[in-house]
Length: 366
Length: 227
Image (cartoon, rainbow over all chains, first blue to last red; front, side, top):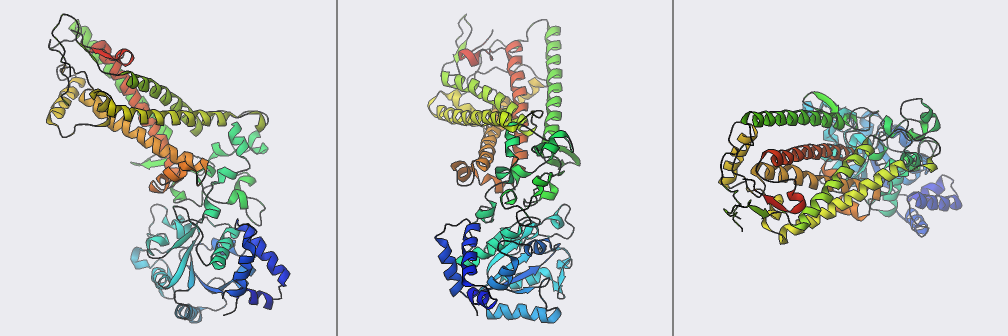
């Protein structure tokens, strides 16, 4: 198998450009300059790792995002660095031919290929809600994952379940970690994830031959260790107490913090406010709309996108924490008032403080 | 253990030692600050005019919340220590004798009393069974819950790798995700507010209507039995 470097040279990329790419990659991964030669060495000497990219229940927004990667260009990742051997959306082959490649890679590179999953398997009706090549997707997923070196779960679908797993989840779509339990899974959530985050994760894995450092929920720390809020350029407005109160008010035009109109930035872990989208052009908050928290688990079921206090939907009543608290407070207040009134009445009708027994108080024996 | 005497003077017992009293009022002040600032973090004040650099309203509110939270937590640790070295009343907050038959008999008597269907039960210098139940299951457990979730949320701002995040970060995935923890922390505030309402009402009512001095006891330390 060719190395990355050989492929790049064959494509007419000069050694100078190659070294530039290595240093750029090191920077985008948050690594020091000392890592640049390591990346170069790895790319000159390591054979390319085959990647099998499966699609379950999904909308292909992850693929759409991936092919728009600017640093490194998706072209570089797809053609030079990884050997994307199976991706039914991007590959030229179709039908039996395509499925044959899957089997071929699985036998030839047993235990040495990376499985990337976009979308998730539905489990109801024996998985009939998602059929690939005549068989339920869940079967393909289990089969391909068996001999994979590592598994990347692209997007919120594969990582958390996303919209198809939102209540009431009729197909019982589950994130892939519910189906694959014996392999390391790197979650790259987002709907879709940022292109540079996707290519960055792949580059890291191929260069260093190991999975990136993950947080408690299995997300790469280099991109998911901070909330949108932590690096948001509107954070000074938050700290100052300057908020958009309603859409299109003066504060909205001035670009104040969107917290009061439901921005989920303070509860969302992603790199949008640092990496941004479409080659670093913008991100939702910059365009004047709050974050909807698309990279967080179950973000569809957290109530309105325009209220940052999530709705609590229990007993068929929809309310937020403050509404519930206020009702409980008023109820208890009324109960206390009534109780006090009865106490006062009883006291008045007795004509004196109630004394029943003249005995002294008992102290508890320890 | 002192049994109240049959002297002509009112029987009284030194129930709340100085550290307990100090803790009670520090704790009360912290809860007031925490509830108000916490509410304002969830539902901020009206927008400030002018440049962002001229204001730090949310910053100060959050600072007050976090400072009060640290005091609340440290005071709670101090209170737990006092349960070990203080008198036996100091331990009542941290346990409920759920297996004791006497406890449940007393409990029934107190419930009947509060529902106006039973006679006034024999007063006791310690917590009555109902208040002991509420102290442990509502006040103590929700306080611990608020400390755990609070530090987990604080760890988010303190960033990954901070001691708060390393010590309490596990709470976030345990309860789902950050947003869930925010909501539960918010609900916890309301639970404590309800507890405070019951607590103050019961104490004042007992002071006026019952046979024990209760409100003054948290200042002087002595509970006095009124004949």
